[in-house]
Image (cartoon, one colour):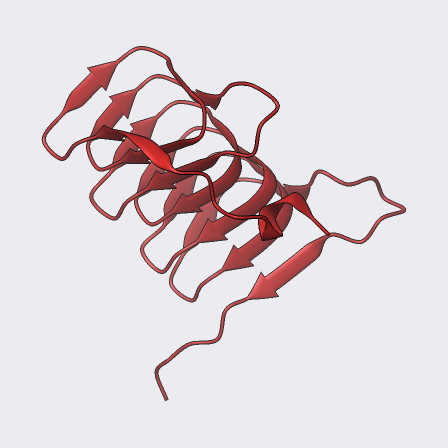
Amino acid sequence: MKAFFKKQPPIRSLIGEGTVLHGEVRFSDGLRVDGEVHGDIVAVGDEHNILVISEKARVHGKVNAGHVIINGCVVGPVQSDELLELQPKARITGDVRYETLEMHQGATIDGELRALKTADERPTLKLAASSRL
C-alpha cells in the first residue's frame, strides 16, 4: 500500500493569513500556509508529511514535501514525493515533479510537468471530475 493511503499526519504549524515570511521554512508532520512565504518550503525527515497551500496563500520559492495540496499560488518548482493535489484555484509557475497527481478542473501549471518515476514505470495521473454539468 502506498504511503499516501496511510493516516494523514497532524497539521502542527500554520502560517496565517496576513503573515509575510521571508526565508526558508522547514517542517515535519503537517504545515498549512494561508499567508505569504518568500523562500523555500521543505519537509524534513523520512516521515510521512503534508503541506497545504490554501486559496489565499502565495509562495515564492521551492516547495518540496510528501503530500502536497495546492489551491493558492506558487512561483517556483514543486516536488511531491507521494501525492500532489492541485485544487481548482491552484496556480503554479514553475516545474512540477510528482509521484501521483490529482488535478482538478481550473488548476493551471506554467512549467514542465514530470513524473518522478522512471520511464519503465507508469505515473499515476488522475483528473478530478468537475461537479458542474
